[in-house]
Image (cartoon, rainbow, N blue to C red; front, side):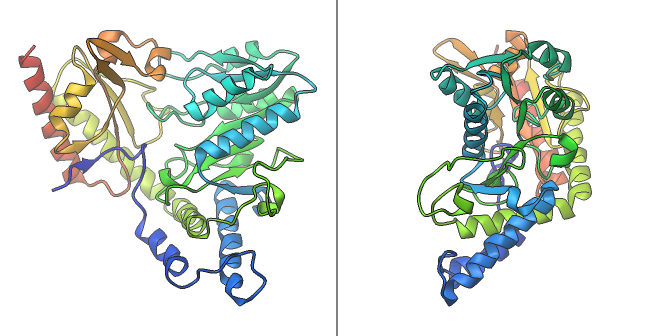
Amino acid sequence: MKPIYLDYNATTPLDPEVIEAMRPFIETEFGNPSSAHWYGIAPRRAVENARKQVAGFLNCEPEEIIFTSGGTESNNHAVKQAARKMAARGKHIITSAIEHPAVLEVCRHLETQGFETTLLPVDETGRVRVSDAAEAIRSDTVLISIMHANNETGVIQPVEEIAELARSRGIVMHTDAAQSPGKIPVDVKALKVHALSIAGHKLYAPKGVGALYAGGLPNLDPFCHGAGQEKGRRAGTENVIGIVGLGKACEIAGRDMDRNMAHMKRLRDRLHQGILSGLDQVRLNGHPTLRVPNTLNLSFRGLEANRILEAIGLEVAASAGAACHAGSVEVSHVLSAMNIPKDWAKGTIRFSVGRMTTDQEIDRTIHVVVKAVKSLRKKQ
């Protein structure tokens, strides 16, 4: 049997409804949506229907959605475009120390072009302080990019409050929302952001497709030059299969939000309590309540994450928060930013449940993890 899958923050399986929505465009509707003849009609309509589905889910207008290859491309497009468009006013960018590399590395690249980046710290729960964001704003600040929910801890960031600060100063606000759609509501109007990135494969849609809400980024330059698809903003023949899948995934996420949130939170908390009941010296990393409902980041004091994953790997698939190499420990930049003590941080595992996760899988995981950790501790 395959191991129990508890790494939904890394990627999700395709929802069966998503597969069915994609099927015609895999099997029969192969036309190019840019074609003027009969074979282009169904693909073209499908792309525009998906645009409406994504826009409805995010509470924006369809024309404000740009389809991309995923979260990384969406982040690149938003951050680079906003920074360069605003460069005449200033070259200062604010982001956080816990962002995904798809934002941090873009900022590092922009620094080679004369931009300056301020990395906001986080508190012990992994949240950016709004007061720190306010203090970091300068007269030449043109862009703030703060993720909606952290991929390692699941901690929800105060995006709305920071966006209000940004708007009051005429600063562009972007959020990387790869980890939040389908787990918590994602409403661009409520969040008050100018741009927001999503990734299909975190949302039970295929890999290789994503979207960028760019309603607050006017006069966008083309991210990719060519035949003018996506209203000239991203050239290249559309990934019809992936786009259809993303649209359907967004429709499902909005339709089933309350049920899925309750399901994931119940199973996450069941896993947490089960592990705590069987083990001592276990620490929760992240805010106790301000987290997406599926993510559980735990440290097992005195152990190495790699050893724990090796011990449970045939039965449970999860992720490590630290890697051990030749006697040294490399702790993730998120845990480092949270100042997690090293004897805790090196034994960090992220469990992320999904809507396909069952009670039986959680109970089996509790048994496997408790047994493995007890065994490793006896060997110390």
